[in-house]
Amino acid sequence: MRADNWGWRARIGLFIVGNEAVPEAEWWAMAPPGVSVHAARVTAPTPWATWNHNRSAVALADDMLRGARQFAAMKLQAVVVGHSSSSILGGEGWDEAVVDALSSVLPGVAVSTNGIDCIAALRMMGVCRPLLVLPPWFGLPFLDQAAAYCAARGAAPARTIRYDPGPGWRDLPPGELYAHGMGFAQQIVPLYEQVRAACPDDADGVLLAGTGFRCVGLIEALEQDLGRPVVTANQASLWHGLRQAGVRPAVEGYGALLRGTR
Image 1: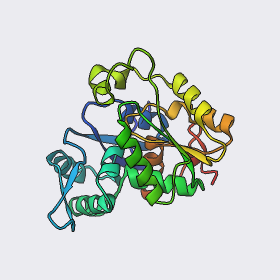
Image 2 (image 1 turned 60 degrees about the vertical axis):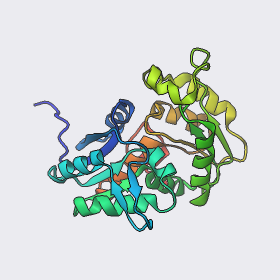
Image 3 (image 1 turned 135 degrees about the vertical axis):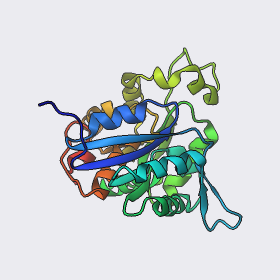
């Protein structure tokens, strides 16, 4: 008999960007035995749900609605909108409105967004002043919006930086990096070096935002060297999804958050 990754403890659905490989790879690396991950891919513009005329509700993008209907037949325990950008750009109340809209299609399934998950993870770890680290494909205005999103939820960044992917990529505008293959050329050692060097003394933790940002492999090393908690987008959503599914195993190798040391 061989392990078949069957989700006998929990099955978690994950909405992800249509052309990204990082979220599934990182989730499968971290997922404990008996937990399976099931992706629905979204190609809609950001944010993945749009407000109605009086901002009382959102309409899900077609990809989201189709994926939710497919998830509804899969006996899932939890579903997450794995898209940091949508949470940040959706505006005040967007996360909660999306949870409401998806819950109407997924009755009995716990629903969350990556924004909700990251803030919950920071609070669990007692982080109020993180070093906020963002991928290179986000422009400077987005960095300001991401910092404002965190600040409005009690986690004002001590500093915000954008990862520098190196000389081979610097001549390209941020918005063109992913189209030229940056998402599949990510290296975690230079990222580790930049985060370690940039972390200010008054930061009480680190948040690496962006579900397409390859970074869970460096969580343990950064926590050991910085002596502070490290939260990443995919780590936070897996942690929150497990909690919502009623599964709380200690996952080793991916930081204090998943080890359950707080």
